[in-house]
Length: 303
Image 1 (cartoon, helix red, strand yellow):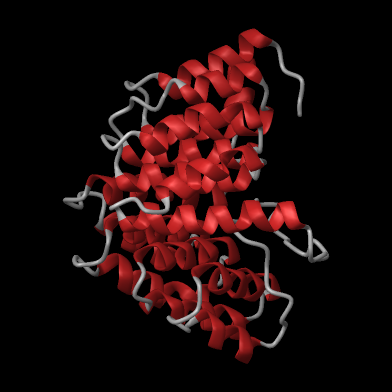
Image 2: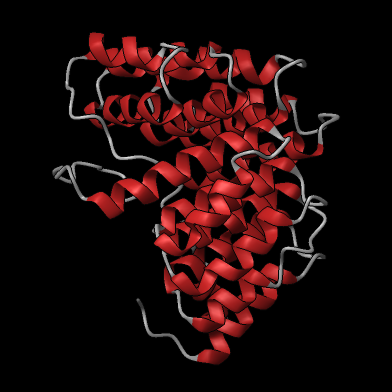
């Protein structure tokens, strides 16, 4: 991890925890802390879980998982167990525990795999499978993830788009196997693979649809825009899915994406509205000469 003066990490944490700052600034501060890592960054992220924004808390959990620091396990476990937290926040806490991958979380994940909130239960099942897969180490895969993300599952070893799509859409298969097909398709980075993924936006599981949208955002392929827009526009769609579609459009960042996101800046669902706000900031970044999105350290240094 990058070594940064404690006072500067504290200053970045203050931006994250300041509810008077624009959400887009707080997001940039969060991702800066993720990149820095260490005790002070973990503490700053951990004390923000009492915020009113479900979107921000969801991203807090995501970043803690990506940091893969076992010291984050207690706070993530508390968030998962807190039924006052929104389902999308609890789900992300469970996914983060799986991303960290320490076997100490098995009992917790088993317990919450029976949670009455289906998105939480399904996430715990997938996270548990990942932890057990890591422990078995019965399969060695070449790390061909071009996105440097810690994924909920390893990719499938299958390379045929046709076969991967079949697994992806097979509702009778486990979510763990379908996720594996999803990440294998992503890693191919072809138009055929992207369109196969987009067909997953019609699956029965909201959790599954939300992960498809996330992966399409990583790919940043324009051919997926119509599918993402269709789900974002659907008022009956789960808000967790609509939020991820908005953020994916922000990553793709074409003029059409910007126009659609502006349409939903006043959506009645707060998490969708806020996602569009953050996504438009991402559009601006993608179409600018800025060196990095997580730029709060630079701004603190200039202050």
